[in-house]
Length: 396
Image (cartoon, rainbow, N blue to C red; front, side, top):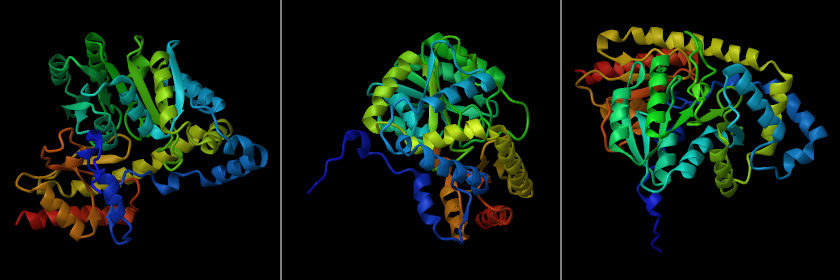
């Protein structure tokens, strides 16, 4: 039988990162590719204790259907943390629990965009979000980043040229894949442009609590007095990625329709893990746990950057993140990305090609993304050495 795939999905390709995962079953490969949190960051003992308590005392709540908006005590705990710690949430806002931050990004597009509407994205940007928007029939318009964040002069140009733009998608804090952080001035410019042109901002902030250097910068959502920011957060990088527990804070009118869309997708997020996260937030020292993760990534990022510094005479350029998980590397002139990826893989090093993060899938790239979160210290040293060896081989 000939299968006729829907127009929305026929031209889409699998996530390059998910495909790279399949090659990482070979234990000899050094994985600089996956954006997984460090395994040692999981609070296993606390989760084991809380999990046992749940099945002893609240098994029905954990195993029965729940409400779409989320387990009420967890919703209240998230709302309180967002308000008290980050000044997020106004009288016009609501909060729901979603199945990982990824679902929040997809629901926002599904709720706000018709087929052919425009989502303006930073270029490069998170492939999971880009594919979510493509799958909903949205047109992606990329705006370049510089060291201070999205280029706001080019953003205004894109807004003028695309009157059917519905969302501006941004990862302003510890960007994936670029590793940069948008300055406060640029955030204000971005907010004012969105307000001027009547476009919602979709702020993706899964890494925001993982600052290990520099000063905190207010989120866009904390500036939102006009109901124009949809904020997506996640517990994936601070508790466990496998639980798939995220949250959305957005104007209630928008959120109500996101709930309807979520009912169609999964009815509700995993009830057991929602209860577990709620107990963890209330009973454990969550802030101390996060400080431990920050210290871990401070040490690992410092090691990777110090090793990369040894390669500066190769012409390799790279960002210096103040938090999060990623470093964005740009190849010297004359070395093709495809050749580099193949050479590195032949030496047992996996990185993510920059083309995976382009809004335009046909556009070239001379960059690649690496992470320090999961490799061991020895793997970091050996992996960066392989980068240098690959560059040396290709420059002959």
